[in-house]
Length: 275
View 1 (tube, one colour):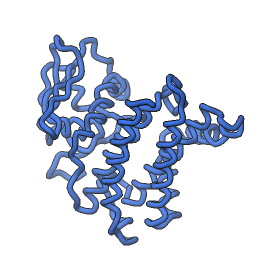
View 2 (cartoon, one colour; view 1 turned 90 degrees about the vertical axis):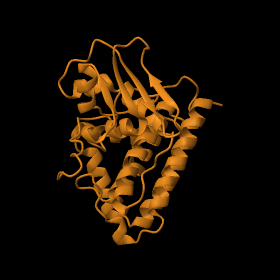
View 3 (cartoon, helix red, strand yellow; view 1 turned 180 degrees about the vertical axis):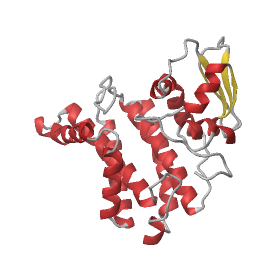
View 4 (cartoon, helix red, strand yellow; view 1 turned 120 degrees about the vertical axis):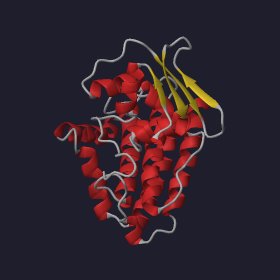
């Protein structure tokens, strides 16, 4: 039994249940409500989550080849799609699924994909890394990435339906990814990665402090873990957070942070301004 993986999967299940609660009473028109993510409604958002779950299951099968070479074919087809349209294939998949499914069908397919992914990740032998569109990932890392996306897109759905955001200590997983992707964010913006370490000291919703980075770092970021997680997933503008940066690299980081793969996103406009 992998205690770390089981812990992340439990948190992923809880985060997913919160998002499901936002969908429970939606009629078909509600599913087509626009979210703050440009061009995406609630249906597209859930389509994206289920597509990524299904893609992750294919990555596990392609890595393990449980039933022979045929298990690798679905993953290879996904990789070919990615090569053919590296900046648009993810959005295309989500939009296509959303257009061809009712809200109820999307919810049922997401529920099925979430359960299949949890089972697939638990089947991976200890120490085995999984193929992905970027560097190979450990099962716990893949589960953490799914939690990050579920939380971030859950904020979009919550905003669309006028519900409160998910604010729990589960955001420590999102903050962890945001911390680990610091150099990636600099690279995606054409900037050289900082030579000096940056320390995070963030307050979780429970009041506990979550820390990453060396104690003797001269550059720091302090403030709310929720604000950092929302910033790293580009669900809030830097000016609308309580985050305090000490040091020039730390300040730059807070203007470009991204916890997700792919090109740098456009982020969100400050409150009161049009997006």
